[in-house]
Amino acid sequence: MRRAVFGQATGIIVTLLGLLILTFVIGRIMPVDPVRAIVGEDAPREVYDRVFRQLGLDRPVWEQFLLYLRDVLRFDFGTSIRTGQPVLEDIKRVLPATIELATFAIIIGASLGIAMGVTAAVNKDRWPDHVIRIVSLMGHSMPIFWTGMIGLLIFYAALGWVGGSGRMSQFYIGMVPETTGFLLIDSAIAGEWDVFKSALRHLILPASLLGYSSAAYITRMTRSFMLDQLGQEYVTTARVKGLSSRQTVWRHAFANIRVQLVTIVALAYGSLLEGAVLIETVFAWPGFGQYLTSNLLIGDMNAVMTCVLVVGVIFIGLNILSDLLYRVFDPRTR
Amino acid sequence: MTSTSPILQVENLSVRYPGSAVPAVRNLSFTVGRERLGIVGESGSGKSTVGRAILRLLHGAALTADRLQFEDVDLLAATERQMLSVRGRRITMILQDPKFSLNPIQRVGAQVAEAFRTHFACSKAEARAKSIAMLEAVQIRDADRVYDLYPHEVSGGMGQRVMIAMMLLTNPDLVIADEPTSALDVTVRLNVLTILDDLVRDKGIGLLIISHDLNLVRNFCDRVLIMYAGQVVEELAARDLDRATHPYTRGLIAAQPRIGGSRQPLAVLDRQDAWETDRGAQP
Image (tube, rainbow over the protein chains, first blue to last red):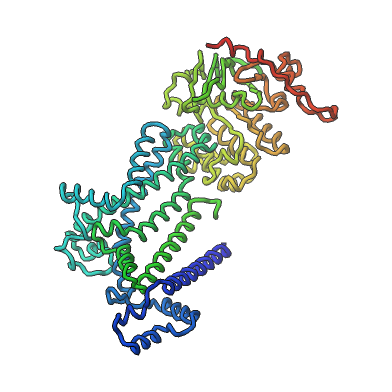
């Protein structure tokens, strides 16, 4: 057990180091001159050279990497050229917005996807299976920016059931202090229930649409995991014991696919955190995807490198979490 | 032990799997009393299908019979709800390989207890005590410890004894044993079968052993049905197995190796269409 923990810790450190090398290399090979980005196009030669030395670009590459490592360990990620603020501050602002959205989306997506997948498997080749296949195929094939716009047209513009773009109504912006950055939590702490309601109304549509699109994938995987289990002998044993079909499915077969589900739900969650760019754009959601994309487009290297690092850390974190859940769900891995 | 009033009566049972041209089981008739009946046949002869058909666990397959009567229950007409109270309570089935037939992520004791709790209202502690007593009855020493093990932590022989405990715990009237020892080491086969046999005799349970092993049915059954291509070709008392008259049965017996027998290649079955008596006659 101790050896397993040690092995895992080493694995994490090696992965992190690899990730840092990767971001460092990305910073070097991008066709962006970091000095020009700071001093501007028309700066005189001596200003350029001074900044060049300040950034340590005259030193050998390995020394530059150690300097980068030192900065990262101090949580100093430099300043974003675009926003003029420390990158860390920017990330602290945009990441909670995305986590809030992605978490709601994955809760919706996982519950919908798992329910549909199990139903499809249990009713294989009968009408519920066919209906679910069509529903999930639609979720898979409709581009999210399009469903986003159609969703806004129907549920916001026509029906008025949900809020429009942004995280809350313009009216409430700045009303609650940013303690955690999670608007629902902040407004609940401040006791501003109107803000809370507004935030929820704004969250529900983009989260549902994202959830629907990840449900498509989760449904398909759940269905195939489940079919695999339903063909096993222990399922027959459960039926022979006199358990109903429903009890057999949930108590026995479903319990055996939890490990696999954890993996795919964690992956889906990870990709929602990194890649909700399109929906964030359509809904003017000030989140991580938008931040990363706009910095990438103007070559704001400090910000881009940090974003890549954040995505990497998120995936490492999700991996650790799913490893832990493996141990909980499967006695054979203990 | 002879058959008194039958527990199970099967008349002209046929089963056809969807998408299959020939039925897996054709016009099968037999009765089981408080005795041990063996069904012997080669792979694909339909013998396993019989067990699952009796429990009505063949989803999607077409099942027809003139009569499928289990004590007071007409298994053909029974609703799923009625079947739930028959399965596991009055008819149970021991499956082949404990490696696959036990749920890998549940403690074996919990799986045994579940069989009891499904049919009897009782506390968890009661079910545990009952299960441990049953595990002891199948000669598991240290049953208290074994109760909390997972299937991958027990041996094949012990796993199969757990299976037997699970299936006898509710005191059923009929136990179907589908190849109960095929997956076990030769050394533990006899042991497991003897345990099963003792319990079944003690409680007067009807036992239907489905097997491909002629010696097993010879030693542990009262009567034997020989199945070939979904039909019964011969029925005889187990002790008369050597006096079988049907060429298929004679062929099976001849194809068995014997210690000290000749070193010549074993006899090979010379299959004849005539053995499948009513294939042509059926509409």
